[in-house]
Length: 225
Image (cartoon, rainbow, N blue to C red):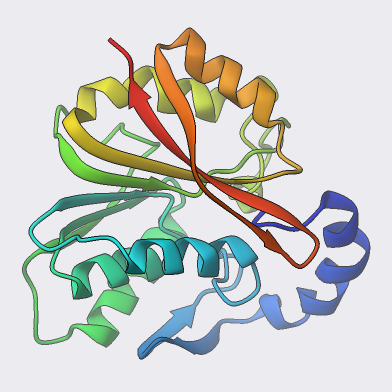
């Protein structure tokens, strides 16, 4: 949940921001003008977005085929596109797809090529396409998803989200593909790592940072076969 403990989120953070999140809102990040639809993961309110944004800011992305899984309002894909990547942004939530599309139009209204935004359940809409860089800010609470508003938080009672991710990853990478996934320490990292291993996916720490209340980690994923 973007670097916030579940207890803090439930009893402190959520009540404070709940009124704000009931309506669409506007914000600015590093020169980008964003519209964030209500119910869409807000990059200003959740620490993981800012941390991941800084991490990607230092990566060479020009000319790369870049995939963001779970794009939300699209801030990471906007950054990658500004840095010269060929961008594909996907989300399972149609509201997030519309939100990211709008933000591309708002910030790159004179550039219609080089990016696309798709509704996709992880890799479901991508066929056999291969990418150079893949970034993932996943839902990671092991709970059943009962409504669309939970898609950004719950990965399914048995981790169905991660089953789809790890079982499909090898079809969308080549030997040099860089795959990065962010998790906070309150995620069941050991359980997620075990699921990755069962699918032949290596799981190493690329970066970590203490952010206010807990440590967040950026892991690099790589098929081992």
